Length: 525
Image: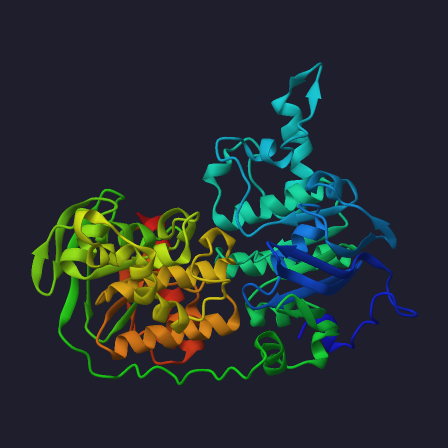
């Protein structure tokens, strides 16, 4: 429950005595290729509130945001700003009316400075020339407003994910926005960075900004937001309801149309099998030094650390996407040298569900069938290399159904799926390949509550079936829930192991002590 809900629910926007709507979508419908993404949906945002928009992947949240920001027009319905109907023909036109959006994926130019990114497309000039001193001076108030106390002329590529997120918000504020739409703003930042972001959002709310907060993390929704709108299959099932008047179970049921039972707690003391994956004093081209770990059959071992700890980089080295420069990598007790992901799968049964599903995990323009089947093409290919769709579909269909991918059909291009469903397709291809050693890098980022529970259940089933799983996750609650053992990483080296007792507060304190002691040690050095 938000702080304001604790003291009583505010009146609904547009009601007698309630705040006037700043942005309103009435009966909005939008179809693509004859398939409805939004079907008569409504949204009402008032000044000075944080309004949660939630729903399963594919429920229509992104479509609504795109309509609200002029990316494309609705097929039916109306968009109103300050009570007046408007036709938002482009994001630039929407911004001119005070409606700005911060997308889940950053839109920063890494080689440009922070100040240049802040004023991208409208850089202040003097006599037709850019004055970097001037843009730095004009950038500072906006950076200060979101708590970014850094040099405006530093390159954007040097920012942490949390700093980049705050810069995106500063960009929106610099456009004098009165409506701020945030799409999964905490998906790639740490808990500490999230708390800082929430403090900024509360300040903006209290200053009168209307904020739409899209998130799959219900604990964040209840900590920050005043009201909630829930979508299912492009329609409203809950509209602008005070969060103090609806329970989490009711929200989840509204999202998925069924009761989602939390899976049983993982048995952290279950017996495990032989060592499948081992690292012995491994060094890498990224700068890892002396990393040693082991993952047994039937075991989930988690790598936890702050952003930049070196976890994803280590995973890339395991599957041959970067070089191991020292130490030994062993599979089933035998030293191996893995040249690439194909070699990892074909000769060692090692699969990698990448954090960056769009760049590394999927071929976006290809069909779902082809993406899932890519790991088994060798098995399916006929003489002379011929591979037919009729061969591929039966081999992948069961895996797609198992993960409940929401799709029009197996022939649908992956680019047309929501982010969560893309993640499911990325995982399904390794199920099809029957990989016995699996590295899952941030497997539940950007997916909804029900899909997250399904992914957790999948990981447990794979482990119970004998798979050896190395889990990389920035969600410590997820780590505590799933992992048999927790290894803490920082500064490209292992900081030690933390016993997973299942007690989240105790495990969290132990993990942070490891990280903090490492930081203090680095400062002393």
